[in-house]
Length: 220
Ligand code: AMP
Image 1 (cartoon, rainbow, N blue to C red):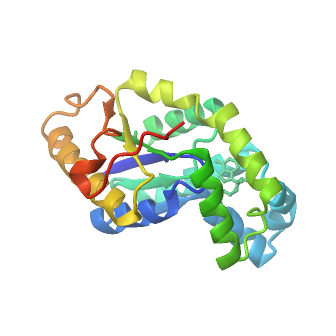
Image 2 (cartoon, protein in one colour):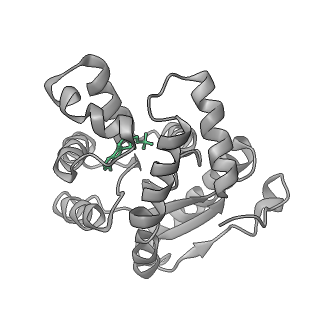
């Protein structure tokens, strides 16, 4: 399975990304984790990019694209779950070029939809549990702002390409995960049989009740 995820900070990309990767036995390529690892190890790159992460700003495209190219080369011939990239239209196009070159274009662009108030609540909870330098209230606002300005608009492009799947991620993580795995399993069977068969956007945001909870209406 070749999946990329687009979601605002706090929507559950990390949790769902690990779940999907474990289920399908593919690598979970999370740009935020790769970048934070450099910062923790105080590598030369880590020292350069630290200020971007601390302020909630995007690190330069070439840094993340090079990381993903390396991870793609290692995963070549198999699947992947991309978490945290693309963040901009430029990254989406560059990523697509790399994927075409390596014959690894995504089958699904998974969009996790969560209302802003819930995102802020989750991020502040995470701030209390983990020691992430970018989970302060001010930086959270900046990351959300950036998401709506430059990341959210990419969804239309995936919609046009016919690989967009949107899920309501306001519900508990296990209910969201069940819905995602069920959907991806069906899509994998369909795309294995005919790669073009699912080339239309799929909106599951109203189907929450079928997966263990009431669907939410309060989604931006
Ligand atoms: P995340 O763990 O995905 O929330 O990412 C944490 C931080 O890493 C972001 O706020 C950015 O500073 C940086 N980052 C992660 N992915 C990217 C990307 N694709 N492009 C630029 N910066 C990124």
